[in-house]
Image 1: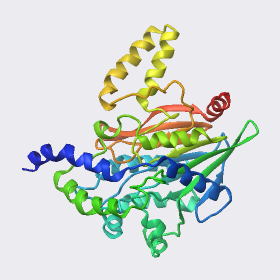
Image 2: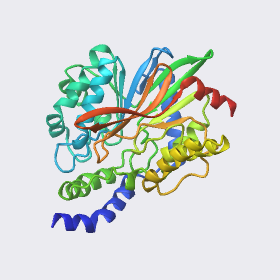
Image 3: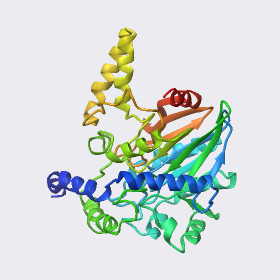
Image 4: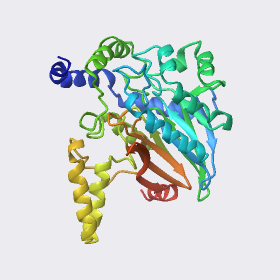
Length: 367
């Protein structure tokens, strides 16, 4: 019976999920991002931090959208826990600063008590970064609890064993060619009329979507429903970041990895065009094969993929239904989109995209 109902209800439920969890408003997004940026630059530590780093020695890993639940059928993080723990162990051992970029806990569907009981291993792994002063936790729309509950500070200290301030954003700041550069990191729900603190969205997710998801065992974080076409929200994020000076924007929220303002398949099409210009037959064949393999994941490709500025990045999420997780790395002066997935019961790190920060800012200044 569950399988039959799942087959009948899957598409309508996913359509309702999209309707009630996203309604981006361009003006509101622009205003919210600008205001938060200025608060942080003005050193309003209630909103966020500026973290200076050396271009060649600074190391950061940015993961978002774990959506840790109570380990029931509605817990999107359940199949990703092993990869997540392996990834964090690698980054801890290699002295990275860990930034959790929002929606780490699914607190629309659950209250905090069952979540913290269910995910002791991941909380313990995250806590290891705190004594090194190497953990920055950002709240998103699904864990606004950390920002607006008066007992949040007590709860976070109970979970991690240390006091920990949770912010709305962080700016990673370095110097390239004598210019001060800002890498602005925030969850990205700001300005979304549905996600930005809307009570009805929370009601829909907690009272209608979560019970159905648990019963039907539906994870909406699949390529067919989540990695197609850059969302309108991502487009607005790109438009805002393209107007800034000496700034890269990194968000989560949409669960869709973006690198240099492009989805993966848009980058493949751009690389294919360059390979054809160079008459590189081997590369053309490789890229065409890769595009065919990935075409089913995308409903469309933006016609602007040759004109975009490399100013917007999205970390993807840590709750894909195949167990994989994606994130953004910064190390040795290079920014990377990485994926962790399992092969023969072992987690592997895969570099999907990479570019040096110096080259990125050179491209921005050529515009």
